[in-house]
Image (tube, rainbow, N blue to C red):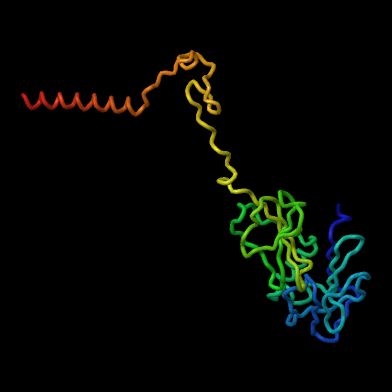
Length: 252
């Protein structure tokens, strides 16, 4: 497992030399996104950038950091010692660490949770992204004909339930983190219709007499008073009783 893990090497004082100047030149890379690195003092730089890695920024025209792939795993190299400079005290340092960890982790951005189809969702759109899409990984939209992706609308989840990956493309966004979203159907739309209420002594579908015992089973088709008629009779009886009590009270 360790042999497949990403590698982040931070240079020490061995074979370190002071660069010709403090000017930093930043290249376009996910690790250096949103950074200028014009103010920090990095200190001495280690010589001998690892082979196979691409320089992502230089100091005094000398490689200060490099990134690439070594034996199939992502590798990041810093040719300076963090304890010898003031980079950790700079406001750009947390951004640099966040970019480095995101890139070393393979661009995995985590999950956006679980929402109902078509509901609002907070999408982490990069500032330099030109296009954002939902790529179905599971569900009805996965493997369907036509376009394999769904263009992402602003703060709206896909209408088709399933598991989606939120991907961004554009200038400097080809290696952006991928976020997963679990879209579930609306409970009100997926609820099964209520079953038909059976008629006493008859089946709901055919209206034929049932097989149970009783008048209906024996073929008795006499009509029955609805429940409202019994309630009306009960109310009338109560009113007559109360009227009798009222009359006796007046007679006294």
